[in-house]
Picture 1: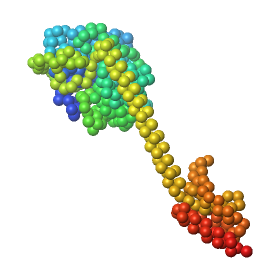
Picture 2: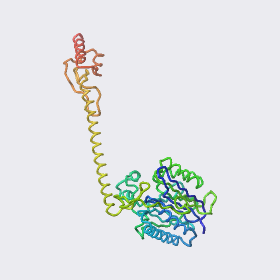
Picture 3: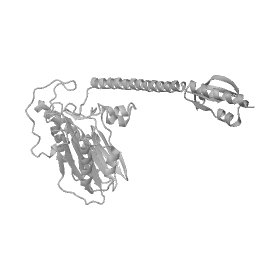
Picture 4: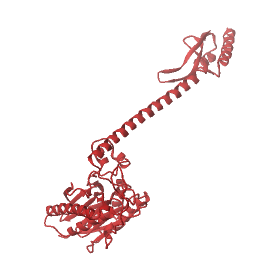
Length: 412
């Protein structure tokens, strides 16, 4: 059965990149996003090859299992085509692409995924990330070493652990089948969107109930407002819903939309790099597929970074505690320059400090017992002493004591 719903696909270069290495597809039953990598037009070629191969799957299927098998075969064939392309054009060595694809079969969504593009499901007001990023930082999150929020700003957040590239003819894919229902909104996007626009913002845009085209425009505008450092590709699919069903010519966006194919510039002199021995880049690459030894270096670097963070935290805490202690000591020292006149059980006493206490801690101590009996003072004077009389200095306190002594001697 042909999918009943509406969809849109849009792609934008972003505010930093000079070319668009993303590709997207929205057809009758197939929807896909591919985020290419590898400078010198390599990413453009890789994502275009992936989308053009997947486009052949845009038809009806008897069962979801048939669609899942077709996705696996097509993506494996794409990997072979990437390898063959690099053999024919060595200047494209190091190119690759993510793939996130969705085929609608009756009441089921059949998904295939590799890389860090994402598939989300918005259902009954709740946004759920369906795919798992195949990235280094996602492994750190899964192992509990960093939080999802820390992963958003981790310096290695673009390091891919799995990708459709030019070296592996048998890529490890995630494929699964999920039931879907009228009212569901499926969002496929490159990390140019998910890396800039957070999930609450995305959920708010999807929850406004606007047609797919206007919703995708809203999400793109949010990515651009956030700086859009990478290409942004969005494919939005509504299952059923209130908006008119559109089934017609498939929409192809990004690099794959170039009808004459991607023009590969003449090869530039190779330059050595730590991550790839010979990689040309019109833009700084944003993705890598690290070898095992490089992964170990990344893990060790992350351990060093975590240790540095702990040391910094301890040093900062000690600094705060020392500053607090110095402040408390300074405040206490100031209180010991103050005096007041008060009473103990039966005599007038000069105290050093201030009248206040901090919990059980007294901020004053007896300085001198004057020997003046409280009973020798008039009642109103005795009350004043018992309530304490502030003195600006020791001299001032001694003056108050002299006045009290005169008063006590004059009292009959």
